[in-house]
Length: 198
Image 1 (cartoon, helix red, strand yellow):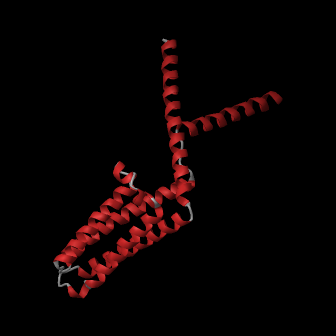
Image 2 (cartoon, rainbow, N blue to C red; image 1 turned 180 degrees about the horizontal axis):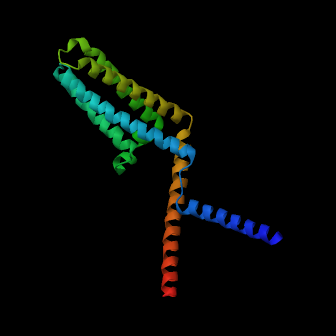
Image 3 (cartoon, rainbow, N blue to C red; image 1 turned 60 degrees about the horizontal axis):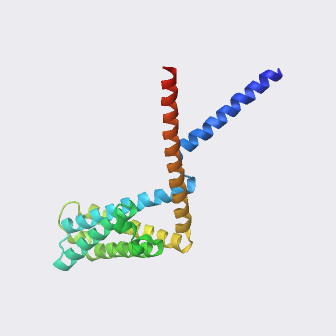
């Protein structure tokens, strides 16, 4: 009976070691890190939706040249915000204004307030085109969502959450790099074993 218990403990220990090794080979983000990534994804989608909303405003509302130019600038800002959220280029990644969550929150809120203001200038009833009410509602919802994500970034920046998020990202990047090295080493070991068998 003792031998059976020892063997069962050995099997359990091997299973635990395998689970740990697998976790190291393919590391996962922590729960907190996933939350920050989720916020980035949501902010990116809101930025794209806001850009679409501004284009919808150009199509559905009769805008004068000044409002047209403001909407085009808003589209450009929204595209920059999206690129910022996906950390697309080093120009945007290294930008002190867009990288800091406090200033990012202020800019996002400002763009959202501009969207709300643009929408109020052109009411749905002033447009004779079909679907103007739906377009008005879409732009309104997206603009307020942009304000909300801006306020969220501002609050997270004031609460020093950016430092926590950056630490989580660095730790994950390090674990991912170590996992990559372990996978390469494991692959080389398997190849050597197969060569020794042959």
